[in-house]
Image (cartoon, rainbow, N blue to C red; front, side, top):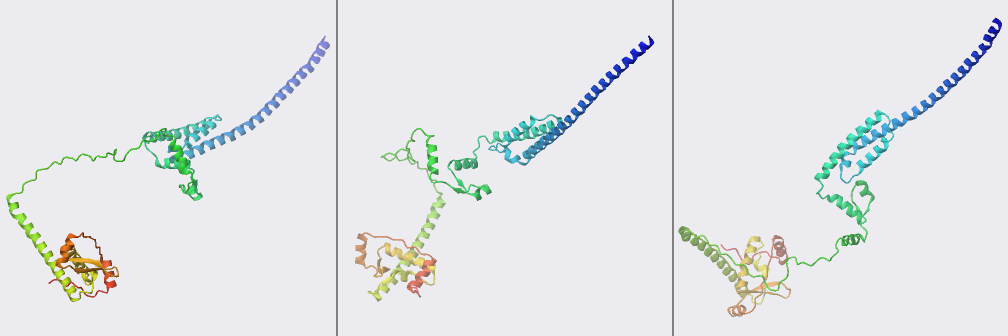
Length: 342
């Protein structure tokens, strides 16, 4: 019995050894599996870390882009802010950790402030007319061929094609379904003149007795003195003209040689002024000689009466210091024919 029991014990011993060896083998398989699983996790962790670094770098680039291009993104015609937000939405799909989520929140705060400022400009400039933007769109529609220098400098240098204005006219024509009606710039045309307006006469303020007594007398004296001086000067010039004509009746008297004073431009103007009274009153006449140059001659009493009944022609004589000097050189005038009155 003891042997049998001992033999039985001896027989069970190898079983225990076999089970333990099987367990050891199983444990070894499990440990090997755990070791293999751990190596795979390390590779995935490395890939995930590199992806997270890439996401963080792109978030920082977007934040820097918003800060650097702030003025351009605030413009109402720029859609760059929308593009940045779309890129941020694509990045947020791969966000798994709090660090990347914090960068996404920071980007959202910056973009929100920028959108608020852009909305305020839209509210304030909603009714304003941007001439620069309108010009850019109009030139683009007309087919402006921009030069390379103009594109680099940001200008609108270039040339339009031959059918540019025709293209614009066709586009504008579609906006008007009916032909425009004709309007006169100053209202409708009437054959009859408009009725005259009634003039309202205002009562003039009666001058005081002292003004009635003093002012007309002073004015009359002044007018009389000026008229007397003019009449005397006209008569004096007429006397010189008659004297030169009497000395040599066959030789014409040049008008410019008669009125020009080579020593004084102001006296030349005065001579022209006073001589004009002789022509107006019919005391002297002007004509053209063979060289088509103006000449002057006195008019006799019989000729003066005939000149009054005939039609008279008037002309305007203009002179300045430059013309005055040119006439002196052209006619070789060295002395005046009308000496200055004493």
